[in-house]
Amino acid sequence: MNSINKYHIYFPTKVRPSYYEKSTVEGIRDGLICLIKQLSNLPIKRISMPALGCGLGELSFENDVLPLIIHYGNKFKNSKGEIIFTYLFMPQDLSSDQETKIISPENRKYINSEPF
Image (cartoon, rainbow, N blue to C red):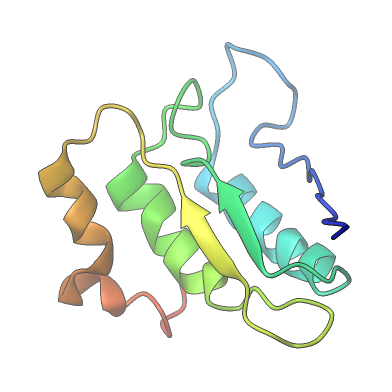
């Protein structure tokens, strides 16, 4: 019988867990940097993540969060140094036309650039 290890990593998007507090781009960036360190200690091959901070945190997916996820997500490597495939769950309010923008040429510029 194959044993599959599953991990749940808590990714806070606010300083205090309050519905009234808004998420910040800096908090998402810092969390992604921390996530890179956490993932490097785990033998995983893929992760799933929501559009961080885009719900009650009120960040813009396209303008705030997507560039960060593209930039830092390309640095996700596991304990063997292998790149981790990231499944990204889009905000519910995006149409299928907007979903294709993730892999568009204009978003590829974020991969090797320094985010804000």
